[in-house]
Image 1 (spheres, rainbow, N blue to C red):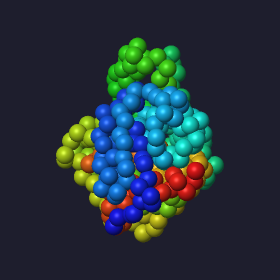
Image 2 (cartoon, rainbow, N blue to C red):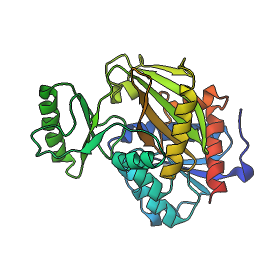
Image 3 (cartoon, rainbow, N blue to C red):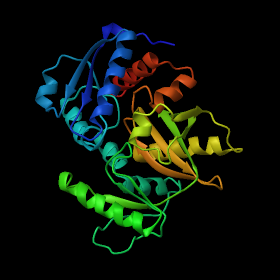
Length: 310
């Protein structure tokens, strides 16, 4: 399936950014630019670190498609600049982007929407004891792609995690972490959202114990199963919860909502990604394809949503 762009719409695709997920953004943005070109758009791809509103205004384009991942590119600062420029752009506005990038704030939004989340607390590095009984997961509040995540089954794991967090603060002094109850031996499932509607559920099975950055973007032995076999009603419940959380956060155009399902088939919200990846391993394009929407159509649809909501 393909879409026909009106009047040779000029699309600026942004990639790169200053965040730790820059490498993923470079691959994602190239994929988006190539797909939009196939769909018939006039595409310009720019690799940036940061960009100012005056620099963006100087570029003669009709729509901006920012394919950046991480706190600056996905978490509000770039969205502030895009709003200031005043051109249609794909993705969330700044307030929703900030909320979704903050995992603790996302938990509060989920609770308002009636969606259960695991017990969690902001990490105080000076505490002698974990604030939540082990096993627990330590992770940055404002990062994605499993950057800086530590699974702690024992006190020795906890001590190693605290040492790693302190070491990471030398290069990332503003990074704040959280501690969340761990679900061990469960399943990871994800639901993409396109214009408020859920895409097929995908199950992720990593060949290694933890679905980390390497498993997400580097390894070829991670298994992805669209529409996996689930107990009665679980698929619909995951999709319902994903839509409810996305609506409460204020998501626009697209997102991906991640869940862990424990051994008793209880689904627990993990996080909301407001600009999910567009690489060969990425889950929203995979789910869209399973629903009959090819990659050029998906990217074209997002451009048309940006124009609609300008």
